[in-house]
Image (cartoon, rainbow, N blue to C red; front, side, top):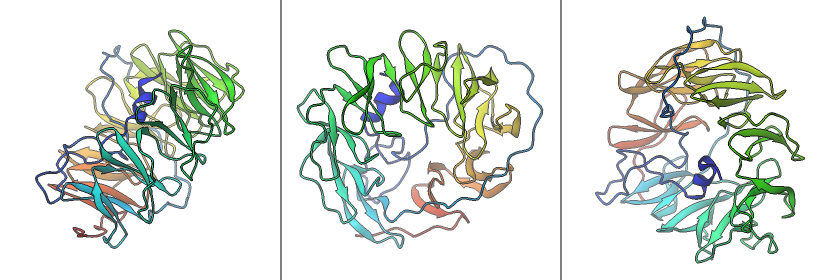
Length: 376
């Protein structure tokens, strides 16, 4: 299956580079569990792009309720636990790594390739797993230690579909989950009853988003609907999922975007285009170039002046200026000055997780530190 999908079976470590957890025995730095995907441009050399489009006005983000957390992952003495909004540990730091809560359960790492689920009271399930994905749609995709097959569990921890025979399973999205048939080693989709509803015939089967999924039957990707009907030609080298009615795609070395009518609305002239959030997508015109943000018309809404950039979330995006990260709004105005060494998690909630020197802190949308160094 696609590397972007299969990689989600292996839970990344949470600690970002340089975070101090008050101990030299802290886990090795790596990409955050809940950070956005890397902002690096694909390694392929892009074909020279035509002239940069003229800037266009940025859209105004629609008012929305910003989600909040009850518990926050946090390190202490080389272990991870969860603190509340006041910085008090509710779940003691006893795990190698942890992941954010989803549907009331969080994945925790007990040791190498040994995962478990805990609830918000810190009660850990009895079963351990070789791989585990967050709960979605009432189920979690897991593979038990010592087994070649994979499956799903419900919120009680019981096997959800005992008759399902699958080698790989992935999280439910819009009521469907990708799974791999062990006999053919091809992927299809099951429903929440554990029944194959789209037969396993794809080399790659990506999650459904806004009613569509990108699949790969031979050398190229195409798009199917929830009935498994092909709705686009299979001619793309890569396709990101739909977001806000747009799906970025790669054709050769260049990226463009299509809408839900499967019409190309942004020609493939960019070295990279990310998913659309708040009406904007981060983009770079040529390899090694600077990042900006484009609107759905393919024109620059925020000029490409940043050495690095992350996706917008709830009206704010992290950008890198002179070696530090700050946050801009959808008009391109710097609302939090560039003083952070790393943005581990953006404002997907009402807080962001950042690194300042050797310390990692949660900050509010006003730039205030939510709490200081917790202690058990």
